[in-house]
Amino acid sequence: MPVKAIVGGRLVNFRLSPERARAHRANTGKTMSDVEAVAFVEKKRRARVRHHR
View 1: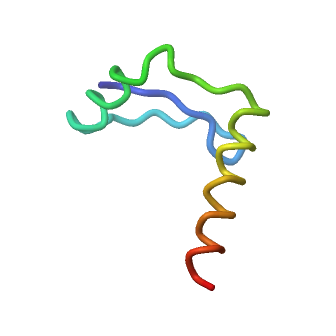
View 2: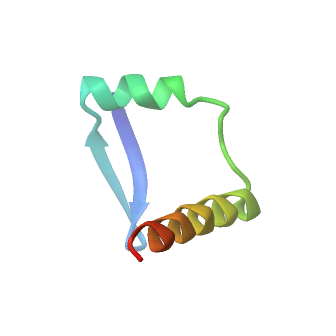
C-alpha cells in the first residue's frame, strides 16, 4: 500500500507492509481527538508508573 507522510517537515513516500496495510484498513474511522489521545497516553503512563513502584 503506497503511503505519503510528512516527516520532519518533508513529504515522504513509502510502502506499507501487507500486515501494516491490513491494520491501517482495520483502524479506518477509529480516530481520536487530540484531547482523547492525550487522555489515553496519560492513562497508560500512570498505569505504567503504578506498576513499576
